Amino acid sequence: MPLFLWEGRTLAGIPQRGEIEAPDELNVRLTLRKRGIIVTRVKKKPRELLIPFLSKRIRKRDLLVFTQQLAAMLDAGIPLVQALEILIEQTENRAFRQVIRNVKEKVEGGSTLAQALRAHTKVFDRLYVDMVVAGEESGNLDLMLKRIATHMEKMENLKRKVRSALIYPAIIFIVAILVTIVLLVFVIPTFEKLFSEVNMSLPLPTQIVIKVSKFTKANIPYVIAALFLLTLVLRYYYRTEKGRFQIDSFLLKLPIFGILIKKIVLARFARTLSTLVKSGVPILESLEIVGATAGNKRIEKAVREARENLREGESLAPPLERSRVFPLMVTHMIGVGEATGNLDMMLEKVADFYEADVDQAVANLSSMIEPLLIVFLGVVIGGLVVSMYLPIFKMAAAF
Image (spheres, rainbow, N blue to C red):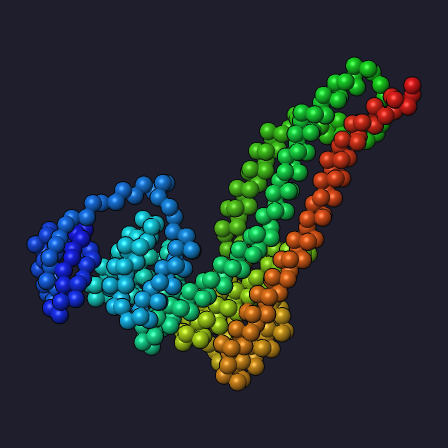
């Protein structure tokens, strides 16, 4: 059905405007009249052209701004439908604008906000929807939306810090690999040709480098194909339940990065569970959501087993401790929280601790990786260059 833009006023004379889906203009006027709105202007809205590969995807930032603005408008006393209409007009992302429009239409049709959001699981995850349910049931939807926005902001900040810390070392490493390949494939063969023309004996390091260069030049298409195939196999294996569990378990055991990954996962676990418990979401449902959003199958398995034990009457801390994934500090604080009835507060303290710990770990990692990569560049590239100049030095010494 086509969309219509309308303007009008209520019986009390308050100006109103919005958009509505209807078969024709007459139905628009009849529908709005039933709502007590006197329509002064109606026009058909042009259809927006949405080309899948050209339209912007819905980013976490878009969702965060939407949540913050909706919370602010509800807190100011603006009705939900009117708030959604304002957000439709303000949202620049066309794909997201269409989602909000669909949500508004469902709410106008009698659905709750949570029911309307549940139809768009790719945009609004289960944590988001369940917290909205808790907000609607408690009559504190604006407060719950503020908590969702705060939670999203903290999670995004965590991701951004880790990403910014790793991007520079990753660029240096990629450049080092590319420079090494260029030297082996293009530069060293030139030296080899020069050495063969003068028919001189070569030092062992130079011979090794020339052999590596020949192998690389002859087999580089096969090496690239093998790496591409290996990437595809690993991606496929990672999508399987067994593969994801094994790879995630391996990542947690890595010497340096494993510790950082574990801290990030624990911070996310504690922050998410704290937010859900504080919002009044039942503990079993909260654990199910936390397990699904943990980002690591090993942690997810531990949370799932703890949930089953909790269902059977055990408290939360002991099964988490038995999993040997959660540190004693975390399980002890959870135990204290359960005993005192302040689980959400204790989890919040755990989250604050690990988020601060992640900040420190990221700073330490950056300061440690950069010198190591510079040394790597010096040893590998410098070694290749020096090995090529050894015969020249030998020749110069002979004269």
